[in-house]
Amino acid sequence: MIRTKFTGALLAGTTLLIGTGAIAQTPPTTTTSQREAMPDQSDAAADAAIKATAATDDAQAKIELLSQQVEALQAQLENIKTAMVKVTPSWKGAPLYEDKDAGFSFKPKGTIQFDAGYVGFPRGQQLNGISGGLNYNNLGFNTRARRAIIGAEGNLPGGFSYNVEFNLAQATVDYEDILLSYQRKGSPFKVTIGNFYPMSSLETVTSSKFTSFMERPSFTDAFNYNRRLGVSVALLDPKTDRYTLTGGIFSQEINNTSFVRTGWEAGARGTFSPKMGATQLHFGISGHHRVNQRDLQGQQYRARPLLQTTDQRFVDAGTIASDGDDSVGLEFAAVHKSLHVAAEAQKLWVRGYTAADAANVALHPNNLIAGTAYVGDPSFEGGYAELGYYLTGETRAYKGGKFDRTKVLHPFDQGGWGALQINARVDYINLNDRVGDAPAGSTAAQNVAAPYYVNGGKQIAYMAGLVWSPMDYVRFTAQYAHLNVRGGPRATVNTLATGSPNGIFPIGTTTLANERKFGVDTAGLRAQFDF
Image 1 (cartoon, helix red, strand yellow):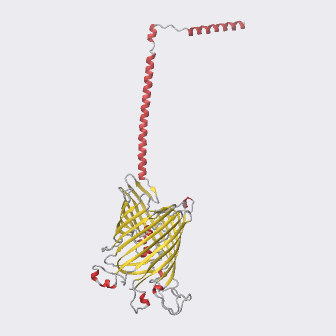
Image 2 (tube, helix red, strand yellow):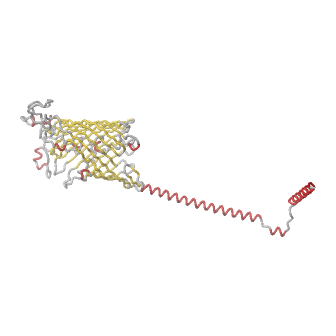
Image 3 (tube, one colour):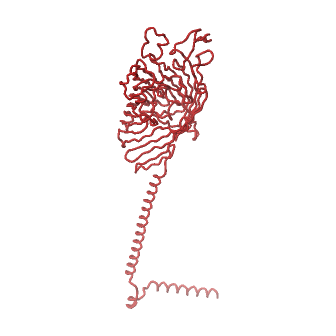
């Protein structure tokens, strides 16, 4: 019974399936009215295409709009970047504000140097100490703020540049470089107006921040190589830095308050700086003609003992009555990797007044002669030779005919030891000169004194120094010097009742003034930073 019912249901289902398939395979018959009522498929496709095109155009327009907005934002960002570059300083020891498009730049600057020094008492003059009218209080240990410079430097549009420096050490205002320069980009010509060094020597034009020892050589002090108000024109090598040729004419020092500023100077200096492989060479020559101002027809030539912590001078020719002087200098230097050598020699001729000249008022109307008149024209010379070596691998920087800032390879703040340099120098200055012979019958002492002999003294110093630069803008210097002095105003020896134990002066004799000798030891320390 159950089987019969299942078989019937199966047959009915099969019949239904067959009928449905037949119906699906036979297309339905459509009347005309039905066809008219049905929508046109081609119109629908067109509408769809129009909508799709509109959507595409709209998307494209949005993309273009977004692209324009992005470009506008990028332009705004570039403008912001440019503006930030103009107002955001770079750092070169101090903030450097620069607008290259406009041609402006501004950088504050300064240098601080603190010195401590010891100048010993002259040895070898007498058995019981020293003599010669020395002031003991200005010898021994002392300290000094050598320089406390504040200023600024920068560029102005059109090729102009400026540098202004004031020295505030010793609670007074003094003047360093104060100048305006003009040099078009790429041009070999440079014009400078202001207060600056008249191209006197390699050591003079090299900044005191970069010298090997605490002070420049003795001849720069003795020959009064100071900054002056003036103008110079330079021919430079802007591409290879192989030569400089500079000439100028100068008035007197900017801090000379006299209204009789009739003194002047004409000077010139040339340098040639070729390279031989890895060695940088320097050759230089300079010459100067100076005229003293009318109401002070005289000049004093003297030098400190290689330190500024004393006002004592062991070599001093005094003030010599003169119209002025002329000088010539020769320079040589070489830098090979960590080694450098430098040497200079200077000769100076004084255009002196004799006693007859001084008495002849018609010879110098409106002039006031000051100082000692000699029977002839004195001449003096000085120079130095030095050797230096960086133990830490640096190379002494050289640029534009002078030494420059050395780049420290391993700064102290980056885990290194900084730059360590050892230096040695022999310094020489001779302010002695025979300008005439004393008359027959004169004593030996008269023959080595004015007006026949200038006994300013001869000084040779043997120097050793150590320079440590923990970073580019910080420097510590230590130096020692032994001075041998012969003659001069401080080499005073009286007739001895008993001889000295070392036999320097025999019993009962008097040594001639220009032959008296003594030695002095000096030592100095300097802490320096600049920005």
